[in-house]
Length: 404
Image (tube, rainbow, N blue to C red; front, side):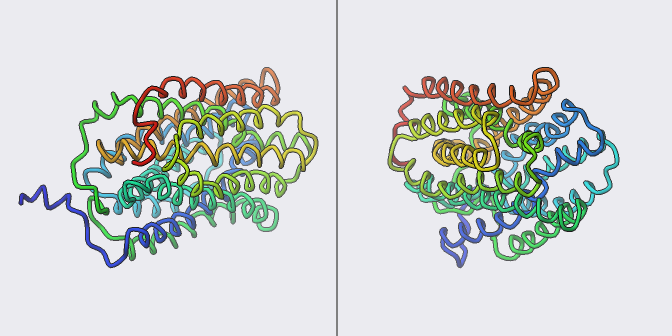
């Protein structure tokens, strides 16, 4: 057996694949709490610096510009060199980012910090998702990826609630430092307990396909566009809901609860949705969830008061809980054949590009048409865009398989 073949053999570890999955999920959950703490505070932080609507959009987009640029390269590198070193590096850099937020004194500096934050996030979340795909038995791809996605979303759901409370009680600086502290805790757990190696999994034993094959794959292209459209529509909520809440005289704590419960609902359905995608046709779950989410987004400007806006965000979360794990399951099926990190990196780039376009376009819409127009147009994009993807992928045999 050649040295190259040895380098891609599965790694033997004292933990089962399910044990490693839950350890990885717990670690990522802690890191995402920290990320969620600062997430709803950034647009308010930018406004306090005097940023216009367009500048708020550019600050938020800087994060996704970095993700869009680095995602394919990092995903490919994780296929070739291993997942753990990248995850550990990203977690350490989170701590650096938390200090940089505090040191930022101008809107332009805040844009640069957000770009750096986007790069560090690429080293953690997509690579951890690829590792979960490595670990999964072929008939449980949706369940494994849904479990990790559940941990990610639970962390992001708890984070905004804590972020609003920390800001109101201790100030913005403590909120940013909390992100760095939680990232350091996660780094220790991953460094000690997650095994090293290019791949960790019973069935990952081949080198990734050439990148041109990844980019030419029909499902990869469809999922790329799906992620782009979903981000472009849903990003309007995640970026500008804090400002819509201020317009409706909601407190930072109330906005944090709304955003947090939105994500918690998505999170609670991830494992169940992933299991459903393993058994049934995932495209139909994607389409149904997208229409529910789109209708909820478009209705948000019509909501009056905390309760109505909270209910619409719960509906949006329910739609995302159905659609997201189904898309991940499709990506993992293809990734098993041509490179898990490469496929997840490319499709996640679609999400990042959508998050780039959404804040900029939404900021312009707010400046010229008012904040309500952001949600009307965003909701329409989610529904119609997902219908297009459904029709594009409907004839592909892999999208109808019940198991990976």
